[in-house]
Length: 369
Ligand SMILES: Cc1cc2nc3c(=O)[nH]c(=O)nc-3n(C[C@H](O)[C@H](O)[C@H](O)COP(=O)(O)OP(=O)(O)OC[C@H]3O[C@@H](n4cnc5c(N)ncnc54)[C@H](O)[C@@H]3O)c2cc1C
Image 1 (cartoon, rainbow, N blue to C red):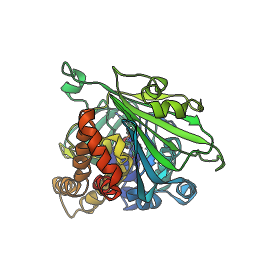
Image 2: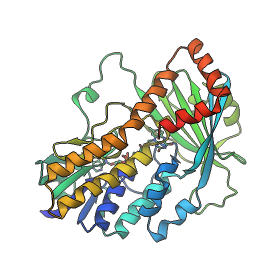
Image 3: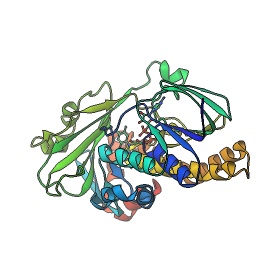
Image 4: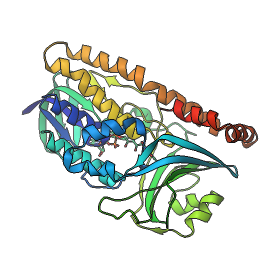
């Protein structure tokens, strides 16, 4: 059986961030991913400014241009109930296709000395430190384990997820790229009863800056729509805008989207990114939280690998720091989600207040950071 200091399950932004950070600290790291890069993923591709410094650190020199060339997003517009609320995104976010971002992080992990294996699914975890993993490509042992397997993995499903209670709403995620001439550098959120669709310009690596490409990604109730054209038809402003679009990528989808309270650890396993907690996509912070929690997990494990503290102490420290620094984002975003669920008659005056008080809108956005 192959032995490592650290095994990380899942090669998305959370897993690669943990892997790169731990390997640079000197740990022997195995990173296991069931998929294969590059690949499209359901996501708005809005990378918030809070994590751009970390992303710069994580990417190696061969991939640094990804961030340098990314379109900056200095504005957000919310289309709801026939009104448009506009706010600045300050500092601006970056728009980066997951096709490029995840592959660049994966290759940067390899460059940092991580043993990174694709198309390997972890099927079973044994032990609580050391850990014994059964995977499709063999068995592995590690002193510490990070679960970065995302929102919807065979490793994270609870009995409730397998058998959703009656009446529980099922949500889908949908996404595709479309051609649009001269899209504005803005993240536009189109809300309708039963969901929303985000649209922002994006470039693929190697594409010239003159290419007009937008990413449309929706979160929608399964009983309301199941394809992007159905989603577009639900929102008049979006329907009008999308009439000129032609599709540039195959649509991808994911379901169900389940929100539960964040849980940064279980059985001495550190959970990072969506595996710890899935934040409302419309706050555009999932990638940032993933990278930040991954780096935090590696930082907390460093003294354990150096023999200075026990694994349970490293795990408790991680849970404490996660709660202090990352949990507030979940609270603020669920408050905003509750507001959007309000009946139209109550929502309208609130929208009017946000429209006429830009400082308040900026404050609400900042609270989700
Ligand atoms: C509709 C929608 C729009 C969104 N828009 C945005 C946005 O604009 N900005 C933003 O910041 N966030 C957005 N998000 C959220 C964002 O996509 C996630 O928060 C982010 O991908 C989390 O990264 P992660 O590394 O935790 O998980 P993931 O990126 O999901 O990576 C987990 C990886 O683990 C692998 N895996 C799973 N199980 C196993 C196993 N057993 N063995 C091996 N590998 C396994 C999976 O293949 C996957 O590659 C959006 C989400 C949705 C649904």
